[in-house]
Image (cartoon, rainbow, N blue to C red):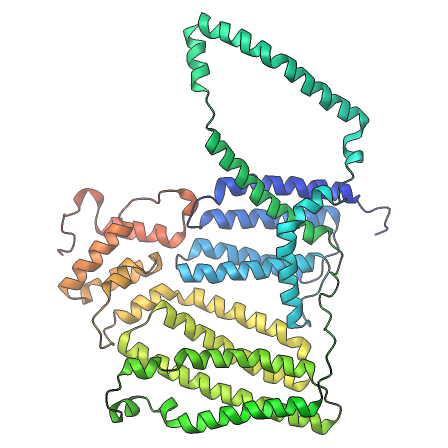
Length: 501
């Protein structure tokens, strides 16, 4: 497409501004109600409609990654309608931010695959910067040639309209006052028309805020350079000598080896260590050092990536030594992750499952997969494939969490009576989201009378209403929970003590 056939930057900028204003109004109507559910899903879908329309209307040079990224954004937005778990929604929101940032990069023509981790980080930072600071640049930074938009004739017409309104205002006041005094019906009509200044100010503020962020984000995606400077380019290596990098990795390997050797029995001893250690409980064994092990394992990944980027390996022998040192460190991390997972399983078998335990386990699964992918790509001189594979693995773990339905899984595990602790009814029925309600109702006959009473009381308090307070917060799980509760305890036939079965 020739440059002459391209639409003017002013026309595209005005269209972006119009979409931003429209989505700002939609956001003010939808997003002011929390918790987010159907409202956020609809708004994100509206944002993607705007993006796709702009791409097709102005034939923007998007990359081949744009379609599947746009579909991923929509699927991630729809997840807010499907599940009710709060922790899962926070993860979905973080995934949305990342996917929208990469979609903006793809809209500029940037490729997502075969890029480094820095590409994803820089793209996210740039997208956030465009969202917050793009609107002033759109309005006052030269994107819109206002002299082309206004023109001398239009400016004169606008000035004439303003003068006419100024002349008419006092006349309207005078004749309106006379009509109010002359007719009671007209007086009632005038009194019924009142403006809530506080509410109007809030609507204007939220519309401007959401619209400004949206217009800035669309400007970054549609009006920035086809490939932002520095994005996707691997930063120049500082040229760290191989001996320095090998020494650092060797020292880390030695530290991990000593720790694993000294702690091997403690790391994998399980019940035997608990039985042989005076005063040691299952909780103390499982918790002692658990999060430290997971944190240490997570920190090793950036260390290895930086070491691979920064060090010089000029000979085949140097490359082999580096791979051996890095692979040994990955193996030690695997030992730590296996120990942490074994402790987690022991803790769950004794005390039950919680959101923190479940999502920490999901993090360990993701780390294990990423380290395996690191060995397969980076240590085989295929570093450009690593970032995309890590992203794909993260999305796969997130998809598995949605399929597993975390809160329902927690309720199913804890009501199976495999733990040694009493059932925490207040947590299951009073804290977990609507996703857990079907499981709790299904397992209700298996509980003790006291547990049944407590579960029924919590469920009726939280989900006993026929419908949510605001349709914008609706999601499928909450709606299903209310229907099941209403079917089990009809509103007109509820006993004051609903725990009697």
